[in-house]
Every structure is written in structure tokens, then in C-alpha cells.
Picture (cartoon, rainbow, N blue to C red):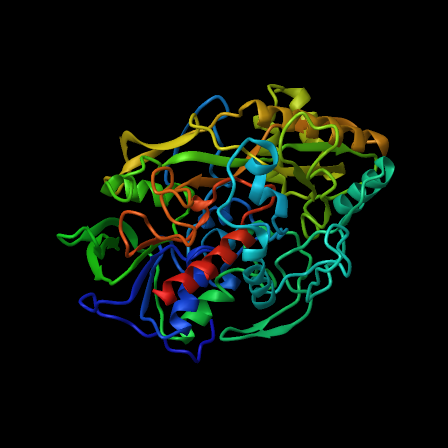
Length: 515
């Protein structure tokens, strides 16, 4: 953050216009926009404040960026957390996300209308598009000069050089007649002066995006939205775990109780915004017994079908080098031969060695010398992965367990099981990606069954009886409670969620400013 800007602070007895719980993709843009329009804002973040130079490419040391408080996984496809998890620290999950930044497909907003399955969003892409363009312009997104699936789209920065894994995927696409392009990435490729922050340097193509970015090339909340918020008078409070929401006799929110350095604090507020993600937001609501007249808080938990297929080549690939996901194809967003609804995009995959080994270990029962031989092929391996639609199902939900964490709060229990649609998509992708690698001579092709991202649990919609918040993110039950994160997604949609979260965050801020 710009060292010349002195952050304003508020007393706990001050009734600030808004307390925002969470400082990532959902909380940071909204906080910045409220502050820019003269509102008094306090942002509570459970994790610490990091500096760019404090980031390290060491995968083990970088675990400090992940939310590692225990989450209990259940279901027939229990989701692995750890590195596939929420972020912790000022900037949230944007500290460790891969910066892959595709836009949602217009058809995904109307999946139920199109297919009779799933759930429609309460608005279409055209409603969100102005906010998408604002996000891309402000944070800095790189991409190709011409995007095959949306020729009118333009990106401000050219893409970084493609790494070996990305080039291999392009060969594989060509072999099967699939279109491909440089994938949109939330990073800058030349030096710029970011408003309210200072100098950001162009991407060095080091490949350590998931471990934080040392030169601020990756566009996160810490080097874009949060400095803007501070410049306009917002206060950022790291190390603050919010656990209790206080209300008056009419049921409206009056303040938040949080723990910092082992001490309980209380911040009064006129409005509360929950931006803690699809796990912590519903956990906070369920713990406090709030905003759940519909019975939908915690329901309809979703992920992305994120099947990976890896192949080994004769030559060195070095999948840890270069930006990890610089090739994309959207040709499978509605496959002609699909036996499922929705679709998926495909991206190239580079990966750091420890993460690769962990994924490989979870995907196979092979152990001993055979597994050691597989690990030895790391430097010659390249991957492709998908992000695919996941349908909301009553079987998938978040509830409170009987176990409590170190704060005395019930741990979340997340039940996650693929349905027939998800399995059909997984099988389709596994077959296609395997054929793609086979077409260019890959050996030892390995399919990894994987789910990524955490989506849903506080769905938005027009009907108070089956949704938690209205289409702007406002609680149906408590008029000064808002939610601004991916918990409000009605469906998963086949795109990495960060861009949509930030865009919805700006949209919710606009709605709040009109009240």
C-alpha cells in the first residue's frame, strides 16, 4: 500500500456506516466503492497483513496464505481443503488464487430455462457486464488480442509468454481441431502505477502465482481494491475473527463482536456485509441463528468439476515454470455429444512439485516403487484441467458439526457428492483430454478426479421462500444485512469465480448506496 497514505481509524463506540467481514474478492471491491462514496467503513479480516516481499515460492511456507482451521468433509466425494481452500490475510483468497480470469458464459445464467435443470440466475450477463469491464480495467487483466469466443472483447495487457505446458495443450487442441487462445489472466505484463498503491511491475513469469506475487504483477485485492479503500477513509483490521452478530429488539444488526490477539472487541455499525466466503459466511449465520427463514442457509453447496489429465513426455516440460494456465479453450461449453447439461472450459496446467505430488497421491491407490516412478516423471509432465458446471443438489450442504474449533465455534461440516450430471461431465472430460494428450504422443496418462472452489450456501433470487438474499445481495430477513461473496451464486457456472465475485461486489455496493 502507498506508504504516504495514513489509514483512518475508528473507535469501537463509533457507529460506522458498514462493517465488512472478509477482505477478498467479495469484500474488498465493495469496501472500496463504499468508502469512495463517503461511507465510513471498517473491514475485519481474520488473517494477518502480508507484504509482497514476504511472499515465498516455497509451497510449504506459503501455506500461511491458506485458511487452515479444520473443516470436516463428508459425502461420496468429500472435498479436500488445505491448499484448495479459502485464503486468510488482507486480500483473502486473491492472495493465493491462480489469477485465471475467464468471464462467465451468457448461457450459464439461464441454465434452467435452457435445459430444465439447475437454477437460473435472477439476471443475465448483460446486467453484470458493465461491472465485469470495470473490474478488468481497474485491477489489470491480460489476454489475447482477439478472443475466439467473444470477438468484441478487449484486454488492456498482452499475455505473458506461454510455458511448455501451455504450448503442449495448443498442440493437442490443433490435433483434435479445437480452437484455443491465451487465457485471460489477472496480471499485468508491463510496469504501471496503480492508483492509491504505487508501482506494480510486469509479470516475471516465475510460476509461483499460488504462493503470492512478490512484484505485484498478479492483480489481487491487496494491491488494488484495499489501497483504494484506505485512500478514501476505510479502516482495515487484520487478525480479527468475527463470531457474534448483535441485533436490537427489532432484529436489525447493531454491531459485530470479534476476537483480536485473544481479546474480545465490539464494533458498532449501521450495516453489516458478510464477505467471508461460501463456508465462513453461512457458518457465521448458522452460529448466530440469523437470516434463515427460508431454511436455505448452508444449502446447495457446489464446487466446480475440475477434472485434471496429466501426460508424460520424452522432453522436459518443467511444469513449475511460467504462468500456470496460459492456454484456454471454450469449445466444450456446450459439447454436441454431451450427455449432461451445461459445459466446461479447458485450461493448461502448470503446477509446483509438492502440489502435484499431493494431487497424484489422492488420485491413485498406487504406492511404493510404482508411485515413486510416477513422481520421478514430474519434470516431463504437462496437465490440462477443466472448470465445469455443478448443479445445486439438496444432498450437498454445509451444517454445523458437534465439534468446536479453538474459538469455541462449531466446525463446519461440508457434504459434497457428485450427481449423475457431474459424473457424466467428468467422464466426458477425462475421455477428451486423454485423447488430446494421446494425439501428441503423451505417455502414462493419469486422470485426477478433483473438485475445486467453494460455491453456494446463501443463494440469491427473487423468492424469499427459497433464497437467502435478493438479487442485489440483501437479506430478505434483516434489511441491514448484506452478503457479498460466492455463497450467493445460484449455480456454479463454468468459469473460475473470482471475476464474477468482484463484479457482483461492485453491483452490491451500488445497490447499498441507493438505499
